[in-house]
Length: 121
Length: 214
Length: 182
Image (cartoon, rainbow over all chains, first blue to last red; front, side, top):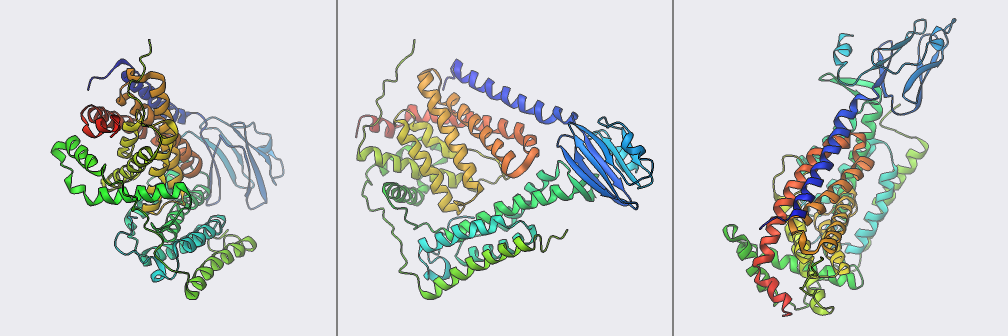
């Protein structure tokens, strides 16, 4: 019934692994928030971590939003002046791009910290 | 999902031997898994669970539901796709939901198929088969003597039990496949089952997501 | 200074095959008990079924040990009716990862690590492997969220089980009779 040194080492190793996972799973949530795309009554949420291309339909036509390397940007839109296309890519919570003529709104939200923002809408 | 310790007739009242059932199950599996509509899967699961119950297995509905909900919930944690509704301030997104449902139905479906297509008297040929048979024999032996285990003298009582077992080396294991050949009715039923599920899958190849929509 | 294990493994032959079968049946019995323990969280694993493997570490060579693991996993799958499913896959991956780790630890450290540490290492490898598999097959990124509690619980139960295994090994007349070559 006596535990030897190696036993304690094994236990410490386990604890270390648990700690590692904790950091990875809980603290790591901070990096890479979500992108929220809104139009009319619909909302889409996508993680900034995964590259994708989404087409959103508005009254004027299809706005194309691309998520790439942790940033989101509008690459095409049926609005006349294409202001939204020229806006820089967003990646930090609170930043946004909007295509008002086509009523498309793209913004970055942090993970849980920004929840009040959501419900405020 | 406990073993069928009571009724050993199995499905169809013994009209199909263990190996036929196993083959049917193995053929059902890909048809079920390739089909990607969560609602269709739900229906298939109901069918399989029904078959499972008919073959004498106890089904713990609550446990199954809980596990399914758990899997779906986990997948919803990372929101992806169109927001369908918001529960307690957390968004339920379409892509995440579909992914979660697919995974949950896959797990539950696989378990259900296993339950009615596997019987404990299934013979696996070869030396390993013999070992499995003997192993199950010891298992049943220990089960029948489990009352001898005393919680207050755990190590001692288990030790005694094991010492006692040492003598039972008799190779009397072989439970053997207790059913005769497949009856025509049994074969027809199994073939119909497999064919129906494959037909459903092929239908979804042409018309994906018939019940899910989009 | 590496202290060699002085207890010789059981010789090949019908006695060994019988022991393997017995251990397999025992594992199966223990997994049934584990299955019956009410669990607040469905995916909790206590790992009682690993006890026979822990105890047999000094008695059987690697090949036979793996056979016992195989028997445990297949037997469980047959009886609970989950042989053709993800559950079986998880069970198999976890059990084999654990067996590998435990055998490795025993070969490397001999008696300098008691069955407690060996069991803890086994649980660590098994649970990590299973969580990773869960990330891939079932849970997606959300899997990492339960990793810490899952792993810590696994460590605690493994430590307790290992303690029990050591005690058992010390006081078992059955084991003694096996070693004497009954």
